[in-house]
Amino acid sequence: MDMSRRVGAEFFGTFWLVFGGCGAAVLAAAFPALGIGFLGVAFAFGLTVLTMAYAVGHISGGHFNPAVTFGLWAAGRCASKHVIPYIIAQVIGAICAAAVLWFIASGKPGWEPGGFASNGYGDLSPGKYALASCIVIEFVMTFFFIFIIVGTTSKGAAVGFAGIPIGLALTLIHLVTIPVTNTSVNPARSTGPALFAGGAYIDQLWMFWIVPLVGAGVAGLISRWMYEPHVLIDTVVIEERSAV
Image 1 (cartoon, rainbow, N blue to C red):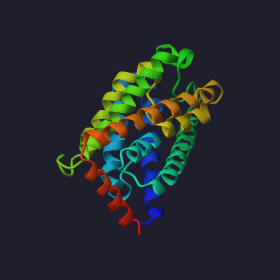
Image 2 (image 1 turned 120 degrees about the vertical axis):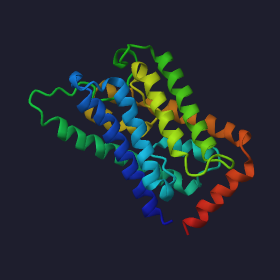
Image 3 (image 1 turned 180 degrees about the vertical axis):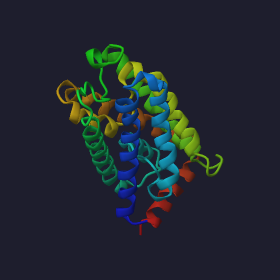
Image 4 (image 1 turned 30 degrees about the vertical axis):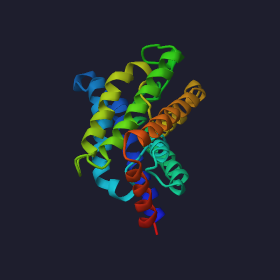
């Protein structure tokens, strides 16, 4: 598979994740009469990953998240030459999605952006949780997200069904963490909205890059022990060959 198609798949997948997930929070959840609430937002994020995993997962692997790319690289499931191009495509996709969402949302008279579905800790946390609490929950949730991704795509797992548990895992993660950090586990997802919310949201981006990447890296390394090493190595070889 040539690199342009791979990065294109990551761009569109990340665009859909940010536009669909954050869009549910900014547009639909803003109207209580619709009854979507944070439960609906959680499912929106899960559905974006589920749908795009089947739409373009066979092209790029369906990462849509710098932490996933880094975690899979640490697990031996992503070729080194794909890491930087994937992450760049993911961040650009997230920023473009946030820009389109901003344009749509600003078309409503009297609209106030507020946090614009951004992530935060302390005063910017939905529940005003302290930095330490936010660090721990982002680490734990990113760790298990990567662990689930590697496990459901490994030898012995049900073939062709990985998108379902991965999408449901992201839904569960949002159900737990929205009150704490507004849920990141994805540095690209955090970056797009923060650039438009501005101010303190940009200042806090460091945490939503460092912690998910660390959690993903630890999960990837443990996955090397948990799952058969030769399967992980073969996956990289297959990716290398398909890119030729």
